[in-house]
Each structure stands twice: as C-alpha cells, then as structure tokens.
Length: 415
Image (cartoon, rainbow, N blue to C red; front, side, top):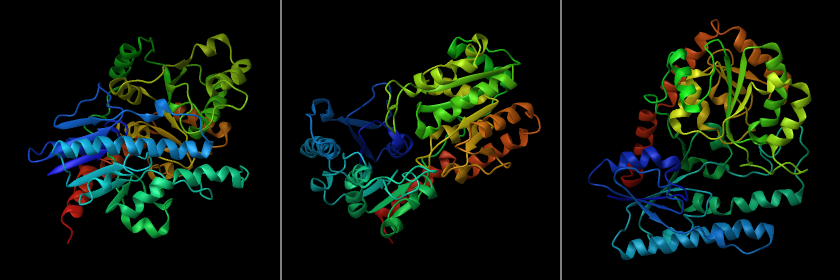
C-alpha cells in the first residue's frame, strides 16, 4: 500500500503512526513537508519536500495574509505532489494535519485516495478559548481572523473520509454536523521511554544535561512550554514565583521553553513576556532568589525526560486550548502534575486523585498549591503513582497506535 502523509513539519503528530506503517515492508510511505528537519529520520519514510512560500510573501491585507499563506502552502504542496505522481507514486491513503493549508489541493491530484485528517483545533469566536475568563467578548472585527483560519479546516471536514483529534474536549469544539466524522484518539505517549527514575539518578543526569549543580535536597519546581506567553499561563506562573521562593528556601524554579509567543501576540508595550514578567517581579526578589530562577531554553527529548523525572512539582497552565504533550509525558514519569482547572487539563487530571488543580487566574492559589506539593512530598506519592497508571490506561502509545491503525483499516476496508 502507498501512504502519503501531509504536514508542513516533519514528523509532527505522525511520528509514531508513520513509523508503524513504514515498518510493514509492503507499504511505501512518503511524507510531504516543507520543514524536513534533518535531525529526524524515520526508517522507511521518504521525505518529499517543498519550499515554504511564506519566505517570499508580499505585504497583503492582514486577513488576506492568513489565506494567502495557506493557499501558497497548498499550492506548493500541490506541485510537489504532482511531481510525485509523475514519478510513479500514487497513494492509496493520505493522512494530513488539517489547518496548515498543505492538504487543500491534494485531492485534485489523487481523487481516489482515501483521506484521514488529524484535526487539532477549530477556531470558534464564541467558544471557550475566545471567551475565556472575564475577558470582554470579542469585537466583530476581532472575530474575523478566527473565521478565516477555519477556511481550510472546513474544507477538510467536508472532503476527508474520517478524522481524529487527541481529546474529547477538542472534539467538542468542532461543529456538531461534523462530529460523527471525528474519532477521539490521542497521539500516544511512549510509556517505555517516559518512565520513572529514582530522583538521585535523575538529578545526576539532569545536572549533566544542563551543566548545573542542583543538590539532592533542592526542591525542583518545573514549568515547560514552547513559548512563554499568556496562552500557557506564563504571567501567572511568574507572579507566583516570589511566594514560592520565599516560603521554600530550597526551591529551585526551572523554566523550559523559548522566549517567544507561539499562540498569541507579544506584550502591547513591546518586548517579550519573559522580559515583562521579570521586570514586574524583580523588586520582590533578592539576588539570591534570582539565582534560584533558571531559564534553560528548549531541551532535547533526553534532557526533557530528566526534567520530568527529577521534578518535585511540575506546573502546567493553559487557556482552554490544545493539550501539550508535556502534561502526559510528565505524568508517565510519575511526575506530580499541578494543573490549571481548565479544559482539557481537567480531562486528564482529577484533583487529589492523579494530580492537583488550581485556579488559572490566581497566582496565589498556584503558589499555595506548589508550596503544599513541596511540603507534602511523601503524602502525595500516591498521586504520582496514579498519574503513571492513568497514562498507562488511557494514553499509552501502543494502545493509541492500535486505534489509529484501526481507523486506517476502517477507511480502507469499510464494512
């Protein structure tokens, strides 16, 4: 069978599924992308790359820019797929991440191929994400970009054979008329890789990765996100830092991620959220306190795993949005997960059962929860064990892969 994966970035959510399908010698697997990431290679998966046209974009109307980027990506992917057809490759199945534009026009080349779409998010101006907390309702003008961002997602919803999304809450964000098409199947967590490790060993490995000198009696509080921004509660976390450091003299705060905004705008007054929040809390911190606040940038998987394993309290905040992999990976390592009481975090974390929840908008509640986690390390050990068990039961890669492959087989051989 010939299988074509479509996503601008290799391998993204399709890392494990593409590897599983490529392991069958009867399959030929091609991955159509604009960012091939040479550091990633998957045995049996051929990369077919096209140039990202956004590098050459001209100035357009802001709304038109959104569509223009999608259409340019779609057209570039179209031409590369056309060359694949001329080279003799015609897929029986296409698996595409909807929302980027890269799958917009591929059906015109391969009209007989079955199509499975990965749906991560639907932009609803009236939904929980847009109307989060006590923020003012979006103005009609502010709703327009969200409507435009759905343009290619709606196309994929119409023309795909089936779709899937990682959480039940994310599935509920899609229009009711399309929900029967969408299965809830997570990408999966490699529970054989993300495993618990005695803290002394984990700390030793972490010190090697970071070239740091954390001590056995240090209390490690961790925060991980792609970018430091309001979508992932970075301002609230930073506001909680002074109290955590004041009440726990052995606490060390470790922040993993880039100084960037991935899902929202930078501060209106300029600079970055990291710069803004450091400036805000600096008067509350001593020189010694600042030395216990560590920004380590992005980390490779191996180092990231040791962060999970060495952490006493892993803090995760998110607006109602896409759930980060770090939540499940930390729990798989028997991490004590402290999460904001927002969807879809609450789909995974049950308060006092496999983690602790706190008010997203309350740095005081966040700090109080962290301090409790550090004070009651031994008493809260059952929550760590339960966190691992919940991942094993609901998000283990081997089980999620079976469900994904069952979807593939159902599309190819409908009953």
